[in-house]
Length: 227
Image (cartoon, rainbow, N blue to C red; front, side, top):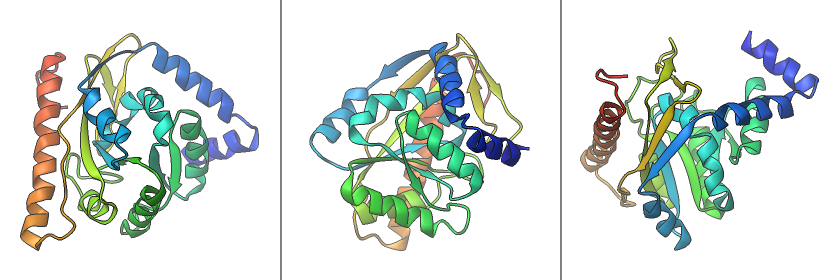
């Protein structure tokens, strides 16, 4: 069904309509942003960053990405037919699509983002995507930071009201007129050379930060159970 819709959208030029509908929808959601100065200071000093986000929370931050338009924020988009449509939409929403497959071993996606960071300052990466398990940080973002010299910046996104889809990640779509909290964490520096033990410790550190901070903010936003 989704593949058919994407084909129709591309064939009949419906991408601008889809973009405008998403913009209107996102305009109905109120955002509170905390600790943004942390990442802006780093970017303005020309330090590369990879923004770490949970796949489940991606929709809530789409509109906010335009805030970083001057830094050409890169994002992996699959090379499939569906990806063609998504790439056109996200480019209108302030992202720079980087085409690569993250579902076939992940190497193509990793190489694509590292190459992108060679000439740009920032990229965003869903650390547990594209197939999970939910909340489990994959090794790719650590390797990406090693190879590019980028700092890893975790960002935590919570909503006070949202629909929870029956997908592997229980994807969250904030409801109209809901409130979103976007909070930036401390950056994580990844040394270029790590032992296997140190590499795994770094991965677990990032995973723990994301889980702990998301749970804390979810509780503050009124969710009394894990999302």
